[in-house]
Length: 348
Image (tube, rainbow, N blue to C red; front, side, top):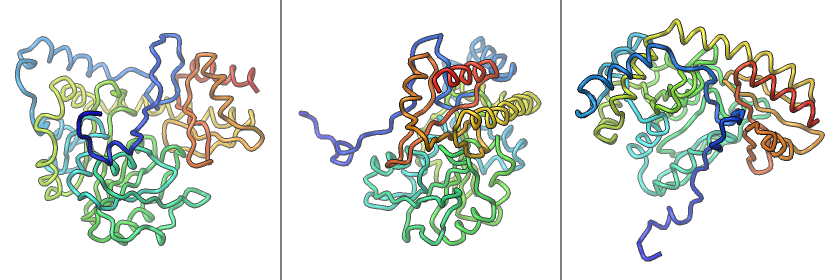
């Protein structure tokens, strides 16, 4: 190359998102998208934005309308909310704000592989703590001297969730080092970390509207933390990191809680139906609090199953963490899951 690229960027592999195949016949169960459409209010809000004079003007830089709506739903002060272009943008903002070059980021493993990429881009060190065999966290082994800590809860790929007691204990042990509770899938769990915020000054909760609100194509996420933290993060984010349409869609989506709860109930019901069906097919299925299932086998490798499903136009996610591999299967619609189970019976 004739241009100068930072050595740490040249050395990194980069984050690889799930496959996005341009084929309308594909049953897509690999990226944890919601199989149901967004709230009708979302389409009305987007249409209103398109037919108004809003597109020629810059959007609200702080997303005030969304922050007020989300604050009401979540029971927090709007000044505690930071908007982002998806929760990945939130994680990037946090990394830029807290981690110096040569600093240290830590997270559990196996978990979200983007954390490592964020550390590499920043020129920071990255260390992991392996989950226990039953997906609890051995907090006594957490690295010392971290600048930022990521804790996905529920976790991906396992779908498991740590108790609030475990989260609080880790946050207290980290003292002044920020703990980011990555709650991308928290809407499918029975509890979340928002109630811990008043007593944990170093806790930051990250959320997305991609999964439970069916807005993966819009790209919208947010963080919740103490106002003094949010004020510093505002200095780091892009001036207008969320556009007019995404703000309109996100505000409408989070306001329609009746629709949200109905879709959530459908996905949880389908998830619970999938577990015994996949177990009967010989998979070891980890109990999930998310909109996907982590499926492993002891009798045969799972990668050929993934490949054969893909050949039959069904995408699931094959994931391998240094030899610990499995299939992460998103909860689709009932018809999509019926097709998946039918094809798996034929394959197996």
